Length: 260
Image (cartoon, rainbow, N blue to C red; front, side, top):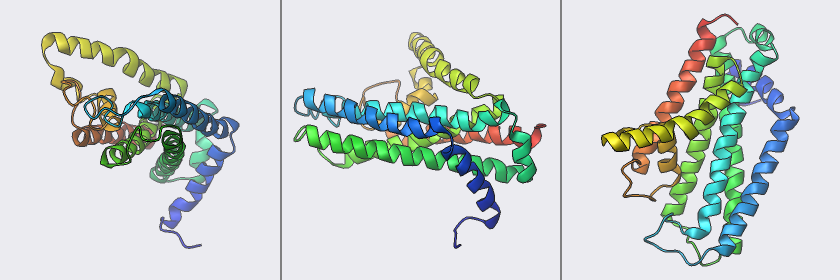
């Protein structure tokens, strides 16, 4: 078989893919995401009025459902990444996995590639369904242009980044649910408190370096341009990529240096 991947990675990738695709929750999750994307986008497209070029989001009120679908995809990707990486420790299968894949670099690389690939595929499917619903139920309420393409690209990037962040943190903590709970707590509790604190101290620019703020800017590209808490989309994408590389790198280092 001809492949662009190194031959040494084919076996670990095949193993990781089988682990992911044979678990029932991993087959149910994409279906739930697609159903939510269809309903959310269809409802907002039907209820919204004409697009306001000076309003938020810049792609029009009819596209709010698309943003909701992307948020759901990002949250699901973080959960999926944490579950795939952390379940090895929960069910004590990591020693067996390491026995068949002696090179831990390849082991982690295979996990990250499968997690990122599945997250990307799910995000593409969610965006396809949302676009179909948006233009099917909201004709004339939004335009397919550079702004919408930027939002779609940002959604794909954010979904993959959060899948890797979830996987990396789970490898560090060696737990699935605590890793996802830590991410949810950081985004829903800690980061809003930082927003409030920096607003009082007049340090709003610091917030743009946080992963939640970077995610908002990456997905809602071009919207909320006057906000002091959000960086421009290109800079936010770089910040989010750095978070993904940092957390995924920490997970790789934990597997490489700690006893399994």
